[in-house]
Every structure is written in structure tokens, then in C-alpha cells.
Image 1 (tube, rainbow, N blue to C red):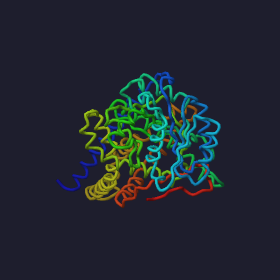
Image 2: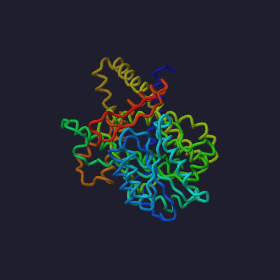
Image 3: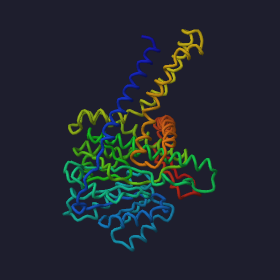
Image 4: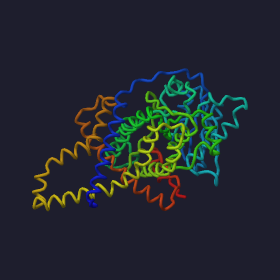
Length: 452
């Protein structure tokens, strides 16, 4: 077997696996039905809000959480902010005894989101009475710009969520709060930058409300629902169990949310996806900030691949769940492989075809059928999601606009190849520092990023 043949076989296998996965996530997605609410009063709720230089948004978030969920305690974690974050939280505490401040100082501070959440976990456990029933206490993680839907707690208290003692964690859907903002880029910028910002935000909204929701819908069946950094729920007793095994609930991976979900499963609980509730967060309107965020996510997924041996040997994770988790965790490495395989196959195919037919133009005329095949297998699997998005979230949008979204979403997905290369470079060079992306309101400030 020649090297060219080997690459062609590998390319075919990668394509078949990808197309099969698209079908597998799409089927449960189109069959989603509303989930039943429960009695939020049956549980005690504590909302953790990690904060690092969040003065631009934290005040509004605290007000929203307390007004929307008056039964919930809110714990703001100030991770050694350089702005007025702590002062804003203290002012809220003076008005409301259900608001709490967890202060972190250097050198322990600024060690990543997981470390900040661990500090809040310790503070909560110290604050609770010794007789507290941790099985009925639910911890919720919300970003400093997050807006939980009004039904988030009742959905989490539903019959398919924490009413079931086996459920240790849950994740709601994620929407972009600025998806309809006509001028999402702060400051006096060009019309093109505003258009580009609107495009990026819409693509992120489509991504989360279709593709990622579809992935979570499949995971609901394989019992491998992934947790996100925003809109994450966890039973306190599940966090306790993880702490018994590994000292802290959240660990050091840059994808600490997904890592927590893995540990929830490994200690014997299951996670569920609450698709009928959601959390809104800011979409990123600039390329640099988006790539910074996605590179961190990709690197975190690569770090979590170290859990694969535990996943396959765990008595709690079914075989189908282990396969689904493996696909997700190995996806960055498959993309790196694809960066080599796909160009190689394409170039050798053109070269061999040109020699066989007697010229490049002759080969193109003889191989016209490749174009619809490329569209069907390489574009349609991505372009289909904006069509489904219109049905669920944007019925008022014209089909012409949706066609533009379809093409734009296919192009948007190629950012993952940029991010996976950057993530690999950071991984092999030992760069594991947490890079925090600034909020959109901070128009006059630079991207806050500190490398360790």
C-alpha cells in the first residue's frame, strides 16, 4: 500500500466518522420537547459568580440574580481585581444579606477560574451549618455577565434533573445576549468592523443554540453531558464526593467546566442537559478575542484527554458514553491530523488526475462530479445548522439572510483549525496560564491576559 493510498483511506475514515456524528447529534436535536418544571423550593440554591475586573457588569448581574431568584444566595468571588469589583459587591452586601463576597489575594489569586470556584466552595461549606443536608443544596455557576432565564431553577428542580438523586450536575443552554445589537463593537469604529462584529456574534449564537445543543442532546442519551462555564449546576454532595477523591471539586485544566463534568461521572453521578432553560452571555465581536477564548477551550480539551483511561475503565460510564467522550476529547487531535491529511489528499488527487487525463483543465472537466460531492460532505453538514436555527430562534429572518448565514457558518467553523494549532503550541511550550477576555463594555481597555 502506497503512502498516497494510506492517506486516502485515512481521509475517508475521518469523513465517515464526522458525517456519522453529525447525523447522530441532529436526530435527537430535532426531536427535543419542552422539559417539565419542578418545585425550586425543595432545594437550597447558591450561585457562584467568578469576578476578575468585572466592574463593568457585576452590579447589574447581582441585581438581576437577586431580583429573579430571591430564594438564592449569591457568592461573588473577587479574584484580586484591579478595578472596583470588590467595592460594588460590598455595596450590594450592605443592601442585601443574601449577597456574599469571597475575596482572593495574590499570590493565591489569579490562578484560573477553577481555583476561584474552589475558594467559593470552601467558603460555602464553612458558612453552612454542620447539620446541613448537602444533597439538597445546589451550586450554580454564572459568569459575571450572565443572565439566567427565569425558569432556570424550576427546570433544575424538575423530575429529570435534581429530583433524581442520581443527578449530580446539570447544564442549561447558552444564548448570546447581544445577538441583535446593531453596533456590538464599542467605540468609534468603521462600519465594516461593526458588520464583522454582528457576523461573529450571530455565528456564536447559531453555534451554541444548534450545534452545541445538538451535541448535548446526544450526550443526554449517552450520559456524558458536558458542563459549561456559564449556567452550570452541581449538587453540593457531588462536589463533596469529588473533593474526597481529589482534594478540590474543580481542577487545573483550562476547560475546568468540562473537567468537572467528567469527575461528576467518575464518582458515580450523572449530568443532565436542561435545554428548556438558558443563560445569556456576551458574544465576542472581534476576531482576536474569539480566538483567545477558543484557543483556551481547545487547549483545555487537550488537557482533559488525559482522562480517557479512567473513562474507559470506569464502572459508572457506559461504553457508548465512553465512545462519545472519546470523540469529543480526541477531536482537536483529529483536526491536527486533518490539517495534514486533507491538503495532501487534495494535492495528490489533482496531480495524479492531471497526469492521467493529460492536463489540469481536462481533469477538472472529467471530475466535475467532485464539486457536488464536496458541497454535500464538506459544506452542507455545517450549513444546515443556520436553517434549523431559523426554525427555533429567528423565524422573522428572510431565507436570503439564512442562506448568507449558512455560508458564513461554514466559513466560521474554520477558526477551529487556527485555534487547535495555537493550542498545541501552548501545550508543548508549557504555557498554561489563564487568559481572560475583557467585556464589551470595556471599550477603552486592552485585553486582560496574563500568561504564567
